[in-house]
Amino acid sequence: MISQLRLRQRNAVIRAVRLFFEERDYLESDTPLRLPVLAPELWIEPLTSGTHFLQTSPELCMKRLVAAGNAKLFQISPCFRKGERGRLHLPEFSMLEWYRTGIDYMDLIEECEDLVKGVVLECGGSPLFPDLAGRFPLDISFARLTVAEAFARYARCSVEEALSEDCYEEVLVDEVEPNLGVGGQPTFLYDYPAALASLARLKQEDSSVAERFELYCDGIELANGFSELVDPIEQRRRFENERRAIVAAGREPGPMPEKFLAALDDMPEAAGIALGLDRLVMVLAGAASIDEVVCFVPEDL
Amino acid sequence: MLNASDLRKGLKILLDGDPYIITKFDFSKPGKGQSLYKCRLRNMINGNSTDRTFRSNDKFEKAPLEERSMQYLYSQGDEFHFMDTNTYEQLFLTREQIAENVNYLIDNMEATVLFFNETPIDITLPIFVELAVIQADPWVKGDTSGTDTKPVTVETGYVLQVPPFIEVGDKIQIDTRTGEYITRVKE
Image (cartoon, rainbow over all chains, first blue to last red):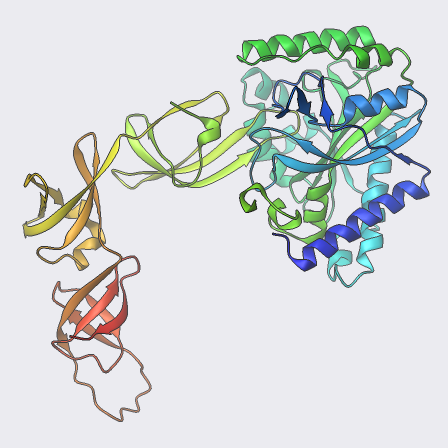
């Protein structure tokens, strides 16, 4: 069970997050947690709830709200993913997700940096976070590194080699991630290989990469964002590929998200991001594990 | 068959034909990527440790291990002989397999012998054993040298630190996990 200090720290971070979005005129949504249809994703297994699934992310519902004319939207909601349990993983965790129309992933990188710095500034003045200002200096810009640059700098092989030799995840986790966002300077990793972005737009100048980024603090992945793919035909093609891969892995693919695909027709250019809220609390509080910053872990219940 | 999602600290699996115990376990999953199950494994036959990373589609077999309650009989050279108290079957383990347990083994002691494919590979002793002190410096009352322990030798030949009041002939309780003195046993 969470300690009193960690619960107070968690409250302070969530309050600061809401304050940030309120000041920027975002609306808060609360889409349903039980869904009949999910985005097909090979490496994310959903949990079921009666005839429905528990959401693995609020992405599809939030994008339908964006397509319906809500230009700035944020949400804090629990997400559920089967079998994910470790120092940084819980099968039920809190996601902060936000979307904004008329911007691309580079603008969203700026806004994400503003959010983290805004929360650090807000919480840093509180006695609950005595050493925060020292650990996260606000006058330093976050680092920006393409995935290709990061592999060239830290890994034994290039990102193309890692993908073709089927060891991308191992190299990323063992060799690249531990170097990202260390020493008080969070790092944005961006321009992901096109194969690693199911819902992101490809870069116009270079279609081998997708306009996707992740934020790292202390080697911990905090957020994943991208310029949204708003082409329903291309999105359907990617979902079909993903569903075939799910079948090949011996699992049952859910139904095609038809209502989402129909809504994409009306979706303006936008960028969106999902940030692990528990991990943000963990990093700002200096906790050693996600277990410390949630009220209960499954093993407590 | 076990799946990668069954892996956890303490699980004993068969790997490349040998039994391994997972001594450290870490789950990781890079964004939008597949799950990785990082394990440190100790070979239960030779004690060597190795690091391996598994993926969600990897499959495992449980190590075919069996524990039997046995009685220690005697040692001859580097062979330590045990008897199954149910079947009276006798067998031996080597000094290497007995390792530091040699410090606590006395005739007729109960032990749990671990078998891999019908071959004994390891023993587990009771957590607490009682051994007689056979050599100790006398306790000088009012000793002001400042030391609060002294070395003694027990019947197995093992030397350990104990409080100064322990004397030859005393029985003491020892924790076999740490090799440390626990208490003097009242006869």
